[in-house]
Image (cartoon, rainbow, N blue to C red):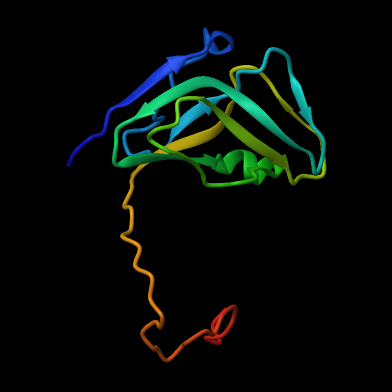
Amino acid sequence: MHRPQLKIQFLRHGQGLPVPQYQTSGASGMDLYAAVGEPVILQPGEIRCIPSGIAVEIEPGYEAQVRARSGLALKHGIGLVNAPGTIDADYRGEVGLIMINHGRLAFTVERGMRIAQMVIQPVCQAELVVQDELTATARAAGGFGHTGHD
């Protein structure tokens, strides 16, 4: 199995933070850390983009998916608005983490806190074919809840 290479650049405000890492040998996601200069308080319902302090170079044919950490979600209601967030192979800017507080209490993000995880996945780009009609199926255009299964 090919193990893609991920190049990481620490930005100035990310200096001194740990290198993203897998916490166990079976982990699929590596932890990302908050690169805030001072604590950021997320009020209930508030959305903020928290900097990670890193930029990445992803091998062509792969993407990075940024996901919430389950512990923060369970204990505090903290999630990522666009989870999973996609980082394309040709993006070279800072990895930003769009956090939301779904909880009932304010939550403080502190420098160096593990706030998200990043998973590297292969990407498949489809060949687009415009058609006048699509192949018929039993479901047809039936949408949400159409199959009768919850």
